[in-house]
Length: 267
Image (cartoon, rainbow, N blue to C red; front, side, top):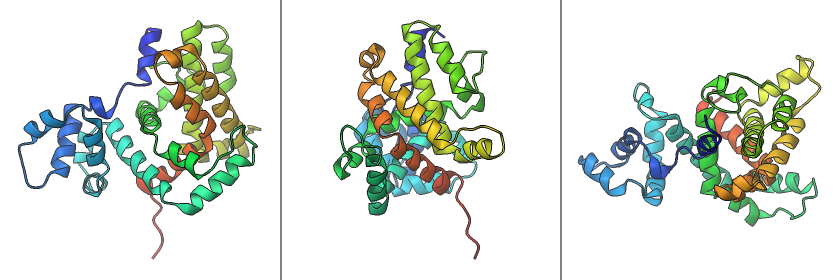
């Protein structure tokens, strides 16, 4: 994969470029009084605002959550977009979550103190949610988590190896490695924190969640300052992910446990 194509992988999917199968599933799930789905699709295709409102509806959410066979008809990007947007919306209404998160973030004494408005801006940032949905869709292939680029044969299970690789590659390659380290650490802390805990307690790894959070914040920050971030209009998104890493990780944990692998309480 060429380096420029690798950068585009970070922005591969969006609601504006929703595949026909996803768009038709969305329309069929949302529309109740019409059946001219193809015509509706031609009218709303590429309209991110309308598609966003439809994908955020309870009707579509319930249809997806109650699906069995038909869930296979939608793409991973569509699924993660729907679930992530729902999780972000729920957390925007969670006063205790916002208060505790502000306290947590300010305990590190950031240059710009966090407040409710700043948290809400992050939780409402559709560029951030789209970036994360893309990342989650890529990582549905477990092997992809350990590869800097999709077609690479070399796997990296340790952050230090990724960093070493960044010292030997070209400028664009550095940017993509920075992004991947951020993505890798966010995925681990947000989607499978049990993996980190297990390796820390039983795998003789002397690193805990804070280790991954620190690296994630640092390398998303480096990526946000890179010339290729500005070129591809990713600076603001990557900066948000760097500064609000802990917020996004908590939202992913909530999404994972609430929607993907809900805990069934005993009666």
